[in-house]
Image 1: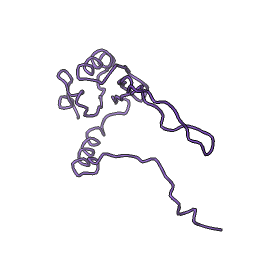
Image 2: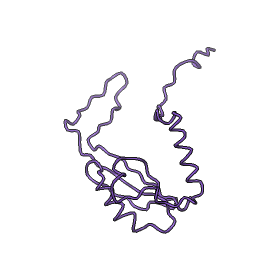
Image 3: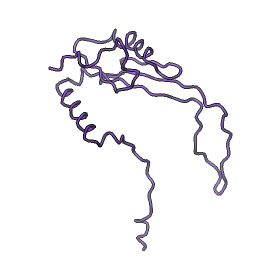
Image 4: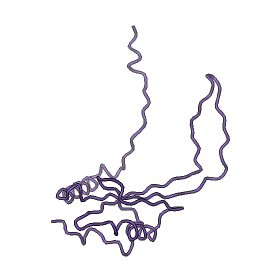
Length: 148
């Protein structure tokens, strides 16, 4: 019996991490975040995030008969871009919206004013990443929060 199968490469999908995550300042920011958020009850946390979708993408893999190559046509246009933004709690989705194109600061402000703020209760903490669209006039930053 051969044990060569133990040494054959076994390709796996990569998990990417930011190079900033392993720097000393990145680690310090992470520690500061966990120190600040530690006293907040999980029921009071609201997480915001967004993602972009390209509707014109084509799958890169296909099926074919053994020994034959799979051929397909690829659309010439790149497709429509859509942004999906949402706010979730541990009870479920608080607010969600789709919008054409990329999200801009005004789009984010409108989403917050019309969808999220009307559903906020006293003591809730909104957590979001540092996307430039989040840093618009009219959106208060955590410096105004009471982190006692």
